[in-house]
Image (cartoon, rainbow, N blue to C red):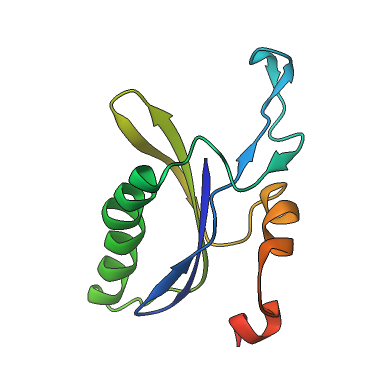
Length: 117
């Protein structure tokens, strides 16, 4: 699952999780493509998973950056692997992810410009 959050250096607002298609063939087979499309909200990303990711990943990251004197302002992208033992962070990016952005932005209730300024 891909979890994106708008951050202002102190607080954050998490968008619905998205999921992209990485494998070239059906049944998660074939070479890794880096993303051939996405959908959101991701049905595998339950409210329980969101609570865990928010507390253990997004909140901790935003709080730690501010505490270290580097408050993060922008879009924080957390690439999560959903495992039987819980979500695991695979990567962070400080940008919108693609193709996830293509399915997330239409879900916004407000103008992106207003959110980012």
